[in-house]
Length: 192
Image (tube, rainbow, N blue to C red; front, side, top):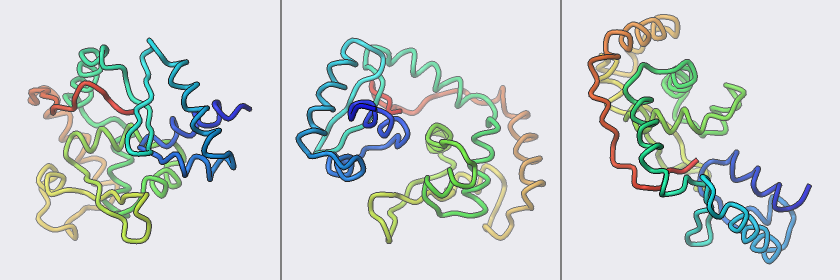
């Protein structure tokens, strides 16, 4: 595989900004080779739906700003409906085992959880907090809105997983048409 291909895979799977230095460390490539591969990616993605976002030595995939209306419509539909099985599984893990890193969540679920975490974050049910042991990997925990959404006054009031899942599905069925579907201002570029 080419360095460009490897870096594309890393950017896609990581889903968050990653430093050029870390890409070089992971791939064993020189900083110059990483920069050249990123330039190739930038050129290859020119005029397409995915773009390479670069800032302060970090890079990440995002959606093209010209597609913002379509991306916003998708996000609006995701936020207006009930929690999907993926988001329900993810928020359950965060509620019962958090705070924990995205990697820990993915180890439990066995699949990439970036989209589920993004959806839960946009809904205000989870938040990212600094990780005292590794500043590169934030921790995810439930929010006060999560507590309110599920009628909890203390985390100790969290029901068993089976009860939680039944309550969540019932609550979302009741409120599926009650939400106004307003999407928070996420800007023109959406990250992957």
